[in-house]
Length: 448
Ligand code: HEM
Image (cartoon, rainbow, N blue to C red; front, side, top):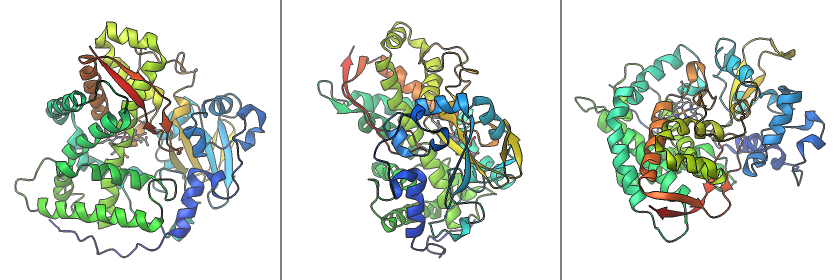
């Protein structure tokens, strides 16, 4: 087994150029010449619709934009200097086609919109790689090494720990005052879960939340101020995990946590530091933002659909079906990107090799050609698991059963304690088109 040193890679350089590119990625109109207001999607020429503006999601006003694209231009082209051509796919079946054809559409150039293919190597940005952004055979080998931790047998072993921790968190909530559900429940529970998966020092678990936020947020929008700060914090993350790796690599028999699995796995034990960091961040982000936001989104959806809350109170066994409905309805990751390996036509549009394709899961999940009454939140919907939120194909979410289990346990425990988790103020949302995040959800809980 090899030990790794966090200081042995010198590819990190100042990344201010890449930072301004990132800002543009998340919100292209905000970087240089922001239009002060976002126009009604039906009042502008369709070619002006550009879904990667993070403000659309922050204000929760992206629905009608997608509605127009699905109806009038379901394979929609945009082009930006530096990023080249990128297509927005908004129909369920087109998304499924791209997601399940990994020979035609690569993940190796990245899974969020980014620099034009061929120009990526000019970026000075902190480079780390992980298997969500790889193609076979490397992807398959690395995924296989860590997949065991979320295999059904392990999940059933984890369930009692999750239930115990969930109960403890819910029992500690204040009952006669307003509090932020995101902070006290959603973040706390997902962080505890991650600490369990990594066997991370429990009292320091909020570091995991912090690193996840830092890894996904571009500098300057509230999480970190500068690229240097971002880099510094991610290096601290690498150093911390490297220490844990170096302790566990000598452990015999190996532990059952994710770090031990990576340190001892045949295909992962010789990972370079930045590959290690990349895979860690994948697991932290994968299991953090997404589940966290589903925990908040469920409370919000039930409050906005009181008849569904009544159904749930009358029949808590609906929880198993409600969980995938929450995940479809919210769609925690609005899109994933692929890159065309060759010229190809989709719905009459000529995609060229090297073009980026954004599979807008959040739109496909509202496609009425596949999903009945898609804009409605129906906890007893039939075939509720038939949604795009976990993707499809070889990159289909590795943690999907774990996420569903966490949410099921949470709702089972909520229903034995509270007649209602009442939303008492407007939610605040993240400015990002990649993570559909709820940052504040003021609630009061009403004990049974
Ligand atoms: C509601 C919660 C979650 C949602 C909506 C979600 C969504 C996704 C999506 C959309 C993908 C990419 C699929 C594609 O490209 O086709 C993905 C991949 C992944 N997710 Fe999740 N995820 C969730 C929870 C989790 C959890 C709890 C974990 C932790 C173990 C996790 C780990 C991963 C990993 C490792 C991948 C990469 C798989 C690969 O490339 O082969 N996810 N997830």
